[in-house]
Length: 333
Ligand code: AHG
Ligand code: MN
Ligand code: MN
Image (tube, rainbow, N blue to C red; front, side, top):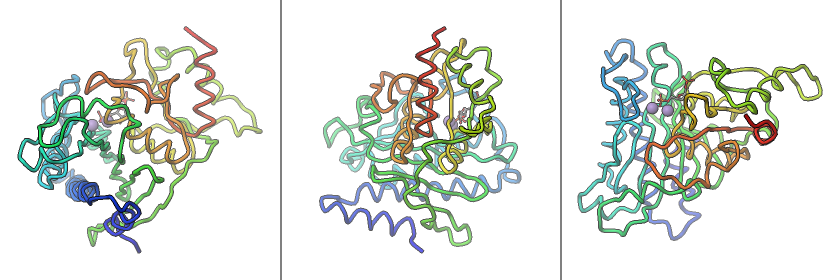
């Protein structure tokens, strides 16, 4: 039984130049994940469910758990002193850690502290998503916006925590995707899924089909293709949509499938955020052998211009993403 801590240290030994800072940073995320996990597990009795009555900068109602998770991850990351700043779905602007230790740290973290938070109230799986970059501003100074607005292919590490029927932490540093399951009685994450890979062909499609009439023509055609009967390609495919990106992604990663949040007539850039939802998931997906695109381009090559920028998202098994991209280019509105 290998623990997450042991695994990180073992992998660090492959890089003689590694200073241990990234390992310590992942350690901070591991700690915050355990704290948030504990709270989520008693959500119904801890007066932690429901809305705060406040909206975030994106006009979304903040849930109590959104703010709790944001605080815990922010505190853990600042306390460990391995990052010069963070950006979060729940913070209007990036937060720079201006202590001497913070200014001398070389990493930034971007995060969705609680993904799928509206599912908390109904006891459905939620998650945390994180993305780690090396800063581009000089060491010894406060973090700058440019540190956060880097294309996804510059990520040093990315991952998610899924608070599900069991709690898992899944991450990549660019050498495959590895999953760890929390033993809640010991508070220890154990390696349970080494080198996770997604099947090239999947049979699951995940999309909020309620928005069907607002979808681009190519997406409508693809959905009809998914529903046609053809035994050679195992169609009709199965429709599964939880409404927590982390949970939908995790299932599709294990079983093969595609997650789609396209542009819609009312939201031309889609709903999901590039920096702390799509980029980390795209990095994981590519590391697992799948694809992630905005319908035309690789997600990881997009140069961001805003912290809370949105992007259409097509992510999953290679052949499924290629199929939908083909239909998007063939059928223009
Ligand atoms: P968050 O809870 O962080 O705001 O994210 C919710 C996201 C994502 O997790 C999910 O896949 C998607 O919103 C669901 O959106 P719809 O309700 O529009 O389907
Ligand atoms: Mn989210
Ligand atoms: Mn969120």
